[in-house]
Amino acid sequence: MSAGYGAPPSDPGALPGPLADATAGSTALPRTRTGERPGPPLWLLAELTYRCPLHCAFCYNPVDFARHEDELDTDGWLRVLREARALGSVQCGFSGGEPMLRDDLETLVGEAHRLGYYTNLLTSGVGLTEARADALREAGLDHVQLSFQDSTREANDFLSHTRTFDLKRRVAEIIKAREWPMVLNCVIHRLNIDYVDRIIEMALELGAEYLELANTQFYSWAEVNRAHLMPSRDQVRAAEATANRYRERHGERLRIIFVVPDYHATRPKKCMNGWGNVFLTVAPDGTALPCHTARMLPGAAFPSLREHSVESVWYDSEGFSRFRGTAWMQEPCRSCPEQADDLGGCRCQAFMLTGDARAADPVCTKSPMRDRVDAIVARAERGDIPDPSAQPLVFRDPVASRRLAGTD
Amino acid sequence: MSGSDPRADEAAGTARESATVQSDSAAAGAPAVAPLSADAIPSVARPYRLQFEEAQDAWVLLYPEGMIKLNRSAGETLARCDGERRVGEIVTLLEEAFGQPGLGADVRGFLGLALAQRWIELR
Image 1 (cartoon, each protein chain N blue to C red):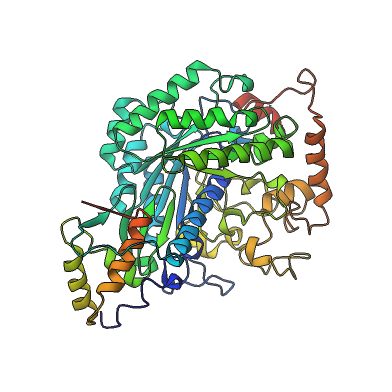
Image 2: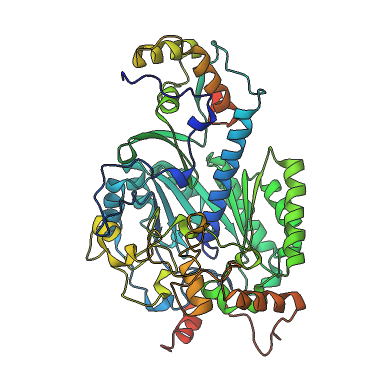
């Protein structure tokens, strides 16, 4: 403690950095085979199950989830939690599917808390009863993110459906009563984007502290249903203006986060904050993934934590090294002065839209394939929506999954 | 989050952090943030949790789906905000720990910013 108090705390340059900078200075970690030295997997997303009582048409679970139903058991998850924490993971998200369907959730949360994780439950609220909420509070759960989506198969009933609203209100009261911070997440798409004001009113009425208005990104089931779900630019602009209006009026009470949809942007997102940089997703069957949809990519299979340790997967596996840093890039990313800002965007999106996982994310206007994104957006601009009788919305369920995976 | 996209959630998390950073700069640039009084009794505010991370060799503030890595001076200051000590006592402890007198203005200034960020609350 003799090195001095350090830079004056009033110097803005000395103020703490965000998560993006959080890996700087981790010097005691092993080197990877490429000689780089990534930081630890700060964020562990435990997708406990693909089972879900809901059937959302925009679900991000893989469309072939029914092929991967063999879940890690309790001991398997406990080992993953311990190994990741030993490497330096600090945030742990319990997700799914619907994680409340795991009856060992309280055990897993309890161990994660004991290990020193900040524990987050990402739930639709279905199954979050008073008794289980008490048990989760007792186990040390830090935070519940409650997502909104319609529990019926009628997407356009989303807001008017009273059963959904009653459930969310009941669960919101359960969350408030246990003094958990309340973050609501609502997936926005063409069929509900015009009602953003009603969604925000609902969040205010429920006493939420954060509201994430997450525009649908087109992966998995949302990609299957893209033509139905893609909003027009005017819709996105109007929704953002509405969000801003509410921010001005209620910004102290409710922080509103509006996530712009990729296809309407001109630069890609820095997906997952960099491949194998911060995020480790563990699929229900124990497969370790750099993101929850990476399994769609061609190439060698990602490693399973049934057979490998978290440490070897993170630092030594080909899968986690594949798109780390910038060495894998091809033009126009390779010589792009902005390459560090977005690291070429999303590998899954590049693969879905161009067939090449190393291509620039075509959301970028510098991509030679940007016209593919423009064509998709133009269709939404024209209101060229498929006739539901000819091409109905596909709702996520095991039967549809087996059909789409060709294993029916 | 069944049904939603954690990629979007992550973007949202990033947005939330950016917001924090922006208001950091705003707070740092504006003289409007008052230093904390020596009599105030600060503690880390809900939903933040302060802990020392061996892997990062740093104090971090954890909050829903996010993390703020603290520099050493900020971390050591917040670690002494236990809801019992007055700012004056915290300054004394830090001066002893760092072997450096005259930290009062810096510490009270930083705690003023921390209060504006809602990282701490006063009893």
